[in-house]
Length: 344
Ligand code: TXA
Ligand code: MG
Image (cartoon, rainbow, N blue to C red; front, side):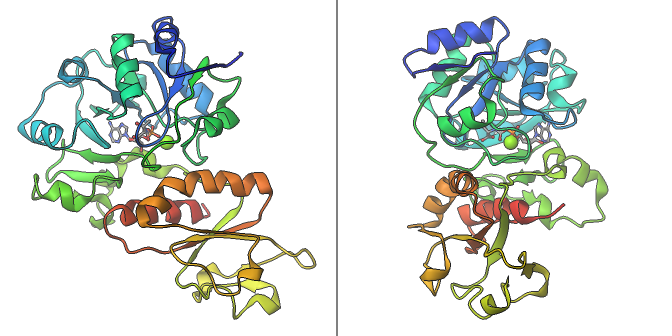
């Protein structure tokens, strides 16, 4: 398949491809999405194929208005209404009871459907022109860092999708916050730019899935995406608790953040290369092949995934990510970094 590169002025062409059952990547404020007609089961199956996505991981439906929600949700509950009023359009995905006409493949057989109204004008215009809600998972091969630039999308999906709408790099850089309101209390399944605290201002009893008792298997199973490998570059990701990361232990060819779990043995005789990303510079700058010092946690979140990809292109072996406080966007950022560093 040849992948057309479209400009943001060519949304009529993009919508025509979607109407014909094709798949088109487009920018949103979080990450690029890979869009298809949410009412077309064969278009939905193309998405799973192009991404190499496990069929048990459901998709998010993107809408441009409340009529779009009514097409896929069984009902709009008072909590849904409150959250939509407070945070839409924006980076909040709401898991609601699923409408009868929604394809099983879209929801991986679950009785619920995840819905989001993006804020990005290109995304909204594409949904409107398509005349249907759009399923749109992040536009990357499954398990890879989400695409935050059209070039990253091209790198992963060229030849596998019909078209890419080439917009700007995405504003937020991390995927939306996902909240499930079909359970009581409502539960944040994935952290994003909309923080738990800001949701609590509207829905006071909301909890985070990672604060639930781990023996609560039923809830865990309701967070399907978290079972799969995620956000992983080819380089090994390590977490640094301080800017002096590694300085004590470089001589013996291993690096450590001070906890025995993350000590890494490097291949003997091959000097491994290392990249750093964080809010401050590491000590001994000469030990790092590249260093990225971010202005703020927001800036760190915006560039993380594209930095991962840059490191892979450079063939660097290790990426060391400096920890940030678990508050606000920091929580979503640390969640992505921890998953990227997990070795399962
Ligand atoms: O910011 C975003 O959300 C981006 C942009 C393109 O909108 N999309 C995105 O989609 O990140 P994806 O497919 O990469 O992640 C969707 C997440 C997965 O963790 C999935 O398991 C979860 O949402 N999800 C989807 N439907 C669900 C449902 N019915 N119940 C629980 N979780 C669901
Ligand atoms: Mg994804």
